[in-house]
Length: 90
Image 1 (tube, rainbow, N blue to C red):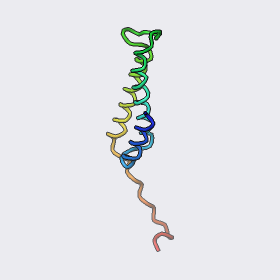
Image 2: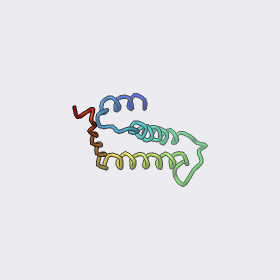
Image 3: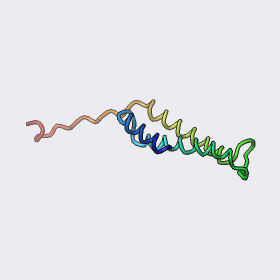
Image 4: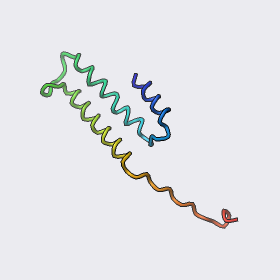
């Protein structure tokens, strides 16, 4: 299911995505699914009320969301001006 969502987003928003955004989206979707699957495991290592995998999933999701926000709030890099050479000036 994650693959279908990632493929849709990559094709639909290709003009807005930066290099690495699809990977960061994967880093959100996979742990999100893992978070809910871990509720079904009775033998999970617990860290308080949550399984250790759920805590780790939440940390990965938070880091990926933070990186996406940071990458898209920065001003885009200014394109370098083209250098005029004797060959291009003609």
